[in-house]
Length: 395
Ligand code: AMP
Image (cartoon, rainbow, N blue to C red; front, side, top):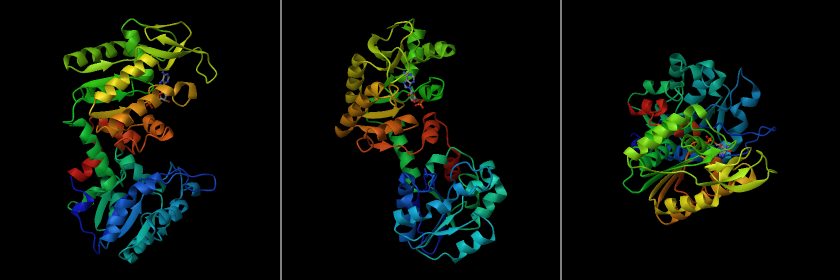
Protein backbone atom coordinates (compact mmCIF):
# COMPACT_ATOMS: atom_id res chain seq x y z
CA UNK A 1 0.00 0.00 0.00
CA UNK A 2 1.61 3.26 -1.14
CA UNK A 3 1.05 6.04 1.36
CA UNK A 4 2.04 9.64 1.54
CA UNK A 5 5.09 8.60 3.59
CA UNK A 6 6.55 6.99 0.44
CA UNK A 7 6.88 10.40 -1.23
CA UNK A 8 8.85 13.54 -0.63
CA UNK A 9 6.84 16.54 -1.75
CA UNK A 10 9.71 19.07 -1.85
CA UNK A 11 9.01 21.47 -4.73
CA UNK A 12 6.09 19.28 -5.84
CA UNK A 13 2.42 20.06 -6.17
CA UNK A 14 0.02 17.53 -4.70
CA UNK A 15 -3.53 17.17 -6.01
CA UNK A 16 -5.28 16.04 -2.85
CA UNK A 17 -8.83 14.65 -2.87
CA UNK A 18 -10.30 15.39 0.55
CA UNK A 19 -13.79 14.92 1.93
CA UNK A 20 -14.78 18.44 2.96
CA UNK A 21 -18.48 17.69 2.61
CA UNK A 22 -19.08 19.40 5.96
CA UNK A 23 -22.36 20.61 7.50
CA UNK A 24 -23.08 24.36 7.15
CA UNK A 25 -25.70 26.46 8.93
CA UNK A 26 -27.97 29.04 7.26
CA UNK A 27 -25.18 31.63 7.44
CA UNK A 28 -22.92 29.20 5.56
CA UNK A 29 -20.74 28.63 8.62
CA UNK A 30 -19.13 25.24 9.22
CA UNK A 31 -20.90 23.63 12.20
CA UNK A 32 -18.67 20.55 12.45
CA UNK A 33 -15.06 20.68 11.23
CA UNK A 34 -14.25 17.02 11.99
CA UNK A 35 -13.63 16.19 8.33
CA UNK A 36 -11.32 19.16 7.86
CA UNK A 37 -9.37 18.23 10.97
CA UNK A 38 -9.18 14.62 9.76
CA UNK A 39 -7.35 15.75 6.58
CA UNK A 40 -4.95 18.06 8.42
CA UNK A 41 -2.06 15.60 9.05
CA UNK A 42 -1.90 14.75 5.33
CA UNK A 43 -1.89 18.41 4.26
CA UNK A 44 0.71 19.35 6.87
CA UNK A 45 3.02 16.51 5.75
CA UNK A 46 2.92 17.87 2.17
CA UNK A 47 3.68 21.42 3.34
CA UNK A 48 6.42 20.38 5.77
CA UNK A 49 8.16 18.47 2.99
CA UNK A 50 8.30 21.75 1.08
CA UNK A 51 5.43 21.02 -1.26
CA UNK A 52 2.19 22.78 -2.14
CA UNK A 53 -1.29 21.30 -1.66
CA UNK A 54 -4.19 21.67 -4.09
CA UNK A 55 -7.34 20.58 -2.29
CA UNK A 56 -10.38 19.29 -4.15
CA UNK A 57 -13.70 18.16 -2.71
CA UNK A 58 -17.41 18.05 -3.27
CA UNK A 59 -19.94 19.77 -1.02
CA UNK A 60 -23.54 18.62 -0.94
CA UNK A 61 -25.47 17.69 -4.05
CA UNK A 62 -25.65 20.77 -6.29
CA UNK A 63 -27.91 20.50 -9.34
CA UNK A 64 -26.42 23.52 -11.06
CA UNK A 65 -23.85 25.88 -9.56
CA UNK A 66 -25.91 27.11 -6.60
CA UNK A 67 -23.89 29.46 -4.40
CA UNK A 68 -24.97 27.66 -1.22
CA UNK A 69 -22.78 24.73 -2.26
CA UNK A 70 -19.69 26.83 -2.93
CA UNK A 71 -16.52 25.77 -1.14
CA UNK A 72 -15.67 29.46 -0.69
CA UNK A 73 -17.83 29.24 2.45
CA UNK A 74 -15.37 26.89 4.10
CA UNK A 75 -12.13 28.60 3.03
CA UNK A 76 -11.77 30.51 6.32
CA UNK A 77 -12.44 27.41 8.41
CA UNK A 78 -9.83 25.42 6.47
CA UNK A 79 -7.33 28.27 6.97
CA UNK A 80 -8.09 28.32 10.69
CA UNK A 81 -7.72 24.54 11.11
CA UNK A 82 -4.47 24.40 9.11
CA UNK A 83 -3.00 27.61 10.48
CA UNK A 84 -2.22 28.60 6.88
CA UNK A 85 -4.04 31.24 4.79
CA UNK A 86 -5.73 29.17 2.08
CA UNK A 87 -6.17 30.49 -1.48
CA UNK A 88 -9.37 29.82 -3.39
CA UNK A 89 -10.19 29.50 -7.06
CA UNK A 90 -13.76 29.63 -8.33
CA UNK A 91 -13.52 26.68 -10.73
CA UNK A 92 -11.79 23.35 -10.27
CA UNK A 93 -10.64 23.05 -13.91
CA UNK A 94 -9.84 25.43 -16.76
CA UNK A 95 -7.51 28.37 -17.29
CA UNK A 96 -8.13 30.08 -13.97
CA UNK A 97 -7.53 26.90 -11.97
CA UNK A 98 -4.41 26.07 -13.99
CA UNK A 99 -2.99 29.54 -13.46
CA UNK A 100 -3.71 29.44 -9.70
CA UNK A 101 -2.07 26.00 -9.48
CA UNK A 102 0.95 27.13 -11.50
CA UNK A 103 1.45 30.22 -9.32
CA UNK A 104 1.24 28.22 -6.11
CA UNK A 105 4.49 28.20 -4.13
CA UNK A 106 5.96 25.71 -1.67
CA UNK A 107 4.11 25.81 1.64
CA UNK A 108 0.94 27.22 0.07
CA UNK A 109 -2.54 25.70 -0.08
CA UNK A 110 -5.11 26.16 -2.84
CA UNK A 111 -8.75 25.15 -2.42
CA UNK A 112 -10.64 24.41 -5.64
CA UNK A 113 -14.34 25.12 -6.12
CA UNK A 114 -16.88 22.30 -5.70
CA UNK A 115 -16.09 19.37 -8.02
CA UNK A 116 -19.79 18.60 -8.38
CA UNK A 117 -20.41 21.92 -10.13
CA UNK A 118 -19.34 19.81 -13.11
CA UNK A 119 -21.61 16.89 -14.00
CA UNK A 120 -18.54 15.06 -15.31
CA UNK A 121 -17.31 14.51 -11.74
CA UNK A 122 -19.97 11.98 -10.73
CA UNK A 123 -19.99 10.44 -14.20
CA UNK A 124 -16.31 9.61 -13.80
CA UNK A 125 -15.54 11.47 -17.05
CA UNK A 126 -12.03 10.83 -18.29
CA UNK A 127 -11.47 14.21 -19.99
CA UNK A 128 -12.55 16.02 -16.85
CA UNK A 129 -10.21 13.84 -14.77
CA UNK A 130 -7.39 14.64 -17.22
CA UNK A 131 -8.02 18.37 -16.71
CA UNK A 132 -7.79 17.91 -12.94
CA UNK A 133 -4.56 15.97 -13.36
CA UNK A 134 -2.99 18.92 -15.26
CA UNK A 135 -2.88 20.85 -11.99
CA UNK A 136 -0.28 18.82 -10.10
CA UNK A 137 2.64 16.35 -9.97
CA UNK A 138 1.38 13.79 -7.45
CA UNK A 139 -2.16 12.56 -6.71
CA UNK A 140 -3.13 11.84 -3.10
CA UNK A 141 -6.50 10.38 -2.15
CA UNK A 142 -7.56 10.97 1.44
CA UNK A 143 -11.33 11.11 0.95
CA UNK A 144 -12.42 7.87 2.61
CA UNK A 145 -16.08 8.96 2.73
CA UNK A 146 -16.27 8.89 -1.08
CA UNK A 147 -13.82 6.05 -1.78
CA UNK A 148 -16.74 3.78 -2.70
CA UNK A 149 -17.67 6.06 -5.60
CA UNK A 150 -15.97 5.74 -8.99
CA UNK A 151 -15.98 9.48 -9.60
CA UNK A 152 -13.47 11.46 -11.65
CA UNK A 153 -11.62 12.91 -8.65
CA UNK A 154 -11.74 9.80 -6.46
CA UNK A 155 -10.85 7.11 -9.00
CA UNK A 156 -10.45 8.04 -12.66
CA UNK A 157 -7.86 10.77 -12.11
CA UNK A 158 -5.44 8.24 -10.58
CA UNK A 159 -4.66 6.74 -14.02
CA UNK A 160 -2.91 9.96 -15.01
CA UNK A 161 -0.40 9.50 -12.19
CA UNK A 162 0.79 5.91 -12.81
CA UNK A 163 3.84 6.09 -10.52
CA UNK A 164 2.83 9.14 -8.52
CA UNK A 165 -0.29 8.31 -6.59
CA UNK A 166 -0.81 7.37 -2.96
CA UNK A 167 -3.15 7.32 0.02
CA UNK A 168 -3.23 10.08 2.60
CA UNK A 169 -3.02 9.25 6.30
CA UNK A 170 -6.79 9.08 6.82
CA UNK A 171 -7.51 6.42 4.18
CA UNK A 172 -4.39 4.52 5.24
CA UNK A 173 -5.69 4.49 8.82
CA UNK A 174 -9.15 3.31 7.73
CA UNK A 175 -7.65 0.44 5.72
CA UNK A 176 -5.34 -0.55 8.57
CA UNK A 177 -8.08 -0.46 11.19
CA UNK A 178 -10.34 -2.68 9.13
CA UNK A 179 -7.47 -5.03 8.42
CA UNK A 180 -6.85 -5.34 12.17
CA UNK A 181 -10.39 -6.63 12.56
CA UNK A 182 -10.78 -8.74 9.43
CA UNK A 183 -7.39 -10.46 9.73
CA UNK A 184 -6.95 -10.43 13.45
CA UNK A 185 -4.79 -12.81 15.43
CA UNK A 186 -6.08 -11.27 18.67
CA UNK A 187 -8.85 -13.76 19.40
CA UNK A 188 -11.68 -14.15 20.20
CA UNK A 189 -12.95 -11.83 17.47
CA UNK A 190 -16.45 -10.43 17.97
CA UNK A 191 -18.72 -8.56 15.56
CA UNK A 192 -21.82 -6.77 16.80
CA UNK A 193 -24.38 -5.98 14.13
CA UNK A 194 -27.44 -3.95 14.96
CA UNK A 195 -29.56 -1.37 13.20
CA UNK A 196 -32.93 -1.56 11.59
CA UNK A 197 -32.87 -4.14 8.82
CA UNK A 198 -31.35 -7.49 7.95
CA UNK A 199 -31.60 -6.61 4.25
CA UNK A 200 -29.05 -3.80 4.49
CA UNK A 201 -26.53 -6.04 6.29
CA UNK A 202 -26.90 -9.47 4.63
CA UNK A 203 -23.68 -9.21 2.66
CA UNK A 204 -21.81 -7.95 5.72
CA UNK A 205 -23.07 -10.88 7.82
CA UNK A 206 -22.09 -13.42 5.18
CA UNK A 207 -18.64 -11.91 4.74
CA UNK A 208 -17.78 -11.71 8.42
CA UNK A 209 -18.93 -15.24 9.34
CA UNK A 210 -15.53 -16.38 8.10
CA UNK A 211 -13.67 -13.85 10.23
CA UNK A 212 -15.27 -13.94 13.69
CA UNK A 213 -15.66 -16.28 16.66
CA UNK A 214 -18.76 -14.55 18.05
CA UNK A 215 -21.53 -12.54 16.40
CA UNK A 216 -24.07 -10.50 18.34
CA UNK A 217 -27.17 -9.71 16.27
CA UNK A 218 -29.17 -6.93 17.91
CA UNK A 219 -31.46 -4.01 17.13
CA UNK A 220 -34.38 -4.28 14.75
CA UNK A 221 -32.52 -6.96 12.76
CA UNK A 222 -32.92 -9.51 15.53
CA UNK A 223 -36.70 -9.91 15.18
CA UNK A 224 -36.51 -11.53 11.74
CA UNK A 225 -34.26 -14.21 13.29
CA UNK A 226 -36.57 -14.69 16.29
CA UNK A 227 -39.73 -14.98 14.16
CA UNK A 228 -37.99 -17.41 11.81
CA UNK A 229 -37.36 -19.64 14.85
CA UNK A 230 -41.03 -19.62 15.80
CA UNK A 231 -41.05 -16.69 18.26
CA UNK A 232 -43.95 -14.27 18.72
CA UNK A 233 -42.55 -10.82 18.10
CA UNK A 234 -45.79 -8.78 18.33
CA UNK A 235 -45.55 -5.79 16.01
CA UNK A 236 -41.74 -5.52 16.14
CA UNK A 237 -39.94 -4.63 12.91
CA UNK A 238 -39.50 -7.73 10.74
CA UNK A 239 -38.66 -8.65 7.15
CA UNK A 240 -40.88 -11.68 6.62
CA UNK A 241 -39.37 -12.54 3.24
CA UNK A 242 -35.94 -12.91 4.85
CA UNK A 243 -36.87 -15.56 7.40
CA UNK A 244 -35.42 -18.42 5.34
CA UNK A 245 -32.25 -16.45 4.88
CA UNK A 246 -32.07 -15.83 8.64
CA UNK A 247 -32.32 -19.60 9.28
CA UNK A 248 -29.66 -20.22 6.65
CA UNK A 249 -27.32 -17.72 8.35
CA UNK A 250 -27.83 -19.50 11.69
CA UNK A 251 -27.02 -22.83 10.00
CA UNK A 252 -23.93 -21.45 8.30
CA UNK A 253 -22.74 -19.97 11.60
CA UNK A 254 -23.04 -23.39 13.25
CA UNK A 255 -21.04 -25.03 10.46
CA UNK A 256 -18.36 -22.36 10.79
CA UNK A 257 -18.24 -22.63 14.59
CA UNK A 258 -19.38 -19.04 15.06
CA UNK A 259 -21.38 -18.43 18.24
CA UNK A 260 -24.44 -16.34 17.43
CA UNK A 261 -25.85 -14.27 20.29
CA UNK A 262 -29.39 -12.95 19.90
CA UNK A 263 -31.26 -10.92 22.53
CA UNK A 264 -33.31 -13.00 24.97
CA UNK A 265 -35.41 -10.15 26.31
CA UNK A 266 -36.48 -6.71 25.13
CA UNK A 267 -37.89 -3.38 26.19
CA UNK A 268 -41.28 -3.64 24.52
CA UNK A 269 -43.44 -0.59 23.88
CA UNK A 270 -47.11 -0.17 22.97
CA UNK A 271 -46.18 2.57 20.45
CA UNK A 272 -43.12 3.86 18.59
CA UNK A 273 -42.95 6.89 20.84
CA UNK A 274 -41.09 8.51 23.68
CA UNK A 275 -44.35 8.48 25.65
CA UNK A 276 -45.22 4.83 25.05
CA UNK A 277 -45.88 2.42 27.90
CA UNK A 278 -42.99 -0.03 28.21
CA UNK A 279 -42.35 -3.41 29.78
CA UNK A 280 -39.60 -6.02 29.74
CA UNK A 281 -40.62 -9.08 27.73
CA UNK A 282 -39.17 -12.40 26.62
CA UNK A 283 -38.17 -11.82 23.00
CA UNK A 284 -39.93 -15.04 21.94
CA UNK A 285 -43.18 -14.01 23.65
CA UNK A 286 -43.86 -10.38 22.82
CA UNK A 287 -47.55 -9.52 23.33
CA UNK A 288 -49.71 -8.66 20.32
CA UNK A 289 -49.65 -4.92 19.61
CA UNK A 290 -46.30 -4.43 21.41
CA UNK A 291 -42.94 -3.95 19.72
CA UNK A 292 -39.37 -4.49 20.89
CA UNK A 293 -37.46 -1.22 20.71
CA UNK A 294 -34.39 -1.97 22.83
CA UNK A 295 -32.47 -4.90 24.29
CA UNK A 296 -33.63 -6.03 27.74
CA UNK A 297 -31.52 -6.42 30.94
CA UNK A 298 -30.69 -10.14 30.58
CA UNK A 299 -29.56 -9.64 26.99
CA UNK A 300 -27.36 -6.71 27.99
CA UNK A 301 -25.74 -8.69 30.78
CA UNK A 302 -24.96 -11.51 28.37
CA UNK A 303 -23.72 -9.19 25.61
CA UNK A 304 -21.41 -7.43 28.11
CA UNK A 305 -19.89 -10.80 29.08
CA UNK A 306 -19.24 -11.65 25.43
CA UNK A 307 -17.72 -8.22 24.80
CA UNK A 308 -15.43 -8.43 27.83
CA UNK A 309 -13.93 -11.78 26.82
CA UNK A 310 -13.25 -10.56 23.26
CA UNK A 311 -9.88 -9.23 22.13
CA UNK A 312 -11.01 -7.77 18.79
CA UNK A 313 -14.38 -6.05 18.44
CA UNK A 314 -16.24 -4.63 15.46
CA UNK A 315 -19.42 -2.67 16.12
CA UNK A 316 -21.90 -1.65 13.45
CA UNK A 317 -25.45 -0.60 14.24
CA UNK A 318 -27.30 0.33 17.46
CA UNK A 319 -29.00 -2.21 19.76
CA UNK A 320 -32.21 -0.22 19.88
CA UNK A 321 -33.92 2.97 18.80
CA UNK A 322 -31.19 5.03 20.48
CA UNK A 323 -32.54 8.33 19.10
CA UNK A 324 -35.51 8.03 21.52
CA UNK A 325 -34.32 8.30 25.11
CA UNK A 326 -36.29 5.42 26.71
CA UNK A 327 -34.78 3.04 24.12
CA UNK A 328 -31.17 4.23 24.19
CA UNK A 329 -30.04 2.22 27.23
CA UNK A 330 -28.98 -0.91 25.30
CA UNK A 331 -26.74 1.03 22.94
CA UNK A 332 -25.23 2.99 25.85
CA UNK A 333 -24.58 -0.16 27.92
CA UNK A 334 -22.97 -1.86 24.92
CA UNK A 335 -20.77 1.22 24.35
CA UNK A 336 -19.72 1.09 28.02
CA UNK A 337 -18.78 -2.59 27.76
CA UNK A 338 -16.75 -1.98 24.59
CA UNK A 339 -15.00 0.99 26.23
CA UNK A 340 -14.07 -1.21 29.20
CA UNK A 341 -12.82 -4.05 26.99
CA UNK A 342 -10.75 -1.51 25.03
CA UNK A 343 -9.14 -0.12 28.18
CA UNK A 344 -8.32 -3.75 29.10
CA UNK A 345 -6.40 -4.13 25.82
CA UNK A 346 -8.96 -5.18 23.20
CA UNK A 347 -8.93 -3.56 19.75
CA UNK A 348 -12.29 -1.99 18.91
CA UNK A 349 -13.52 -0.52 15.64
CA UNK A 350 -16.84 1.29 15.29
CA UNK A 351 -18.00 1.97 11.78
CA UNK A 352 -20.65 2.12 9.12
CA UNK A 353 -23.67 4.35 9.62
CA UNK A 354 -25.62 5.06 12.76
CA UNK A 355 -23.33 3.48 15.35
CA UNK A 356 -20.86 6.30 14.69
CA UNK A 357 -23.58 8.86 15.51
CA UNK A 358 -24.39 6.84 18.63
CA UNK A 359 -20.81 6.62 19.94
CA UNK A 360 -20.38 10.36 19.39
CA UNK A 361 -23.67 11.23 21.04
CA UNK A 362 -22.91 9.12 24.11
CA UNK A 363 -19.23 10.12 24.34
CA UNK A 364 -17.57 6.78 23.54
CA UNK A 365 -15.67 8.05 20.50
CA UNK A 366 -12.41 8.51 22.39
CA UNK A 367 -12.86 5.30 24.42
CA UNK A 368 -12.76 2.91 21.46
CA UNK A 369 -9.69 2.18 19.34
CA UNK A 370 -10.97 3.65 16.09
CA UNK A 371 -14.13 5.32 14.81
CA UNK A 372 -14.46 5.11 11.05
CA UNK A 373 -15.16 8.35 9.17
CA UNK A 374 -17.01 6.80 6.25
CA UNK A 375 -20.46 5.24 6.64
CA UNK A 376 -21.18 3.77 3.21
CA UNK A 377 -17.50 3.23 2.40
CA UNK A 378 -16.88 1.25 5.59
CA UNK A 379 -20.02 -0.83 5.07
CA UNK A 380 -18.85 -1.80 1.58
CA UNK A 381 -15.42 -2.77 2.95
CA UNK A 382 -17.14 -4.92 5.58
CA UNK A 383 -19.01 -6.59 2.72
CA UNK A 384 -15.62 -7.60 1.35
CA UNK A 385 -15.78 -5.27 -1.66
CA UNK A 386 -12.74 -3.51 -3.02
CA UNK A 387 -13.58 0.17 -3.18
CA UNK A 388 -12.87 1.84 -6.54
CA UNK A 389 -11.03 4.75 -4.90
CA UNK A 390 -8.75 2.32 -3.10
CA UNK A 391 -8.24 -0.01 -6.08
CA UNK A 392 -7.24 2.96 -8.26
CA UNK A 393 -4.26 3.65 -5.99
CA UNK A 394 -3.33 0.01 -5.46
CA UNK A 395 -3.26 -1.21 -9.07
P1 AMP B 1 -28.68 1.21 10.50
O1 AMP B 1 -28.59 2.49 9.74
O2 AMP B 1 -29.01 0.02 9.67
O3 AMP B 1 -27.47 1.00 11.38
O4 AMP B 1 -29.94 1.34 11.44
C1 AMP B 1 -30.01 2.27 12.47
C2 AMP B 1 -31.43 2.48 12.88
O5 AMP B 1 -31.97 1.30 13.41
C3 AMP B 1 -31.55 3.52 13.96
O6 AMP B 1 -32.21 4.64 13.44
C4 AMP B 1 -32.40 2.83 15.03
O7 AMP B 1 -33.41 3.64 15.54
C5 AMP B 1 -33.01 1.66 14.30
N1 AMP B 1 -33.38 0.56 15.19
C6 AMP B 1 -32.61 -0.07 16.07
N2 AMP B 1 -33.33 -0.99 16.77
C7 AMP B 1 -34.60 -0.92 16.33
C8 AMP B 1 -35.83 -1.60 16.67
N3 AMP B 1 -35.85 -2.54 17.60
N4 AMP B 1 -36.94 -1.26 15.99
C9 AMP B 1 -36.89 -0.31 15.03
N5 AMP B 1 -35.78 0.36 14.67
C10 AMP B 1 -34.64 0.06 15.30
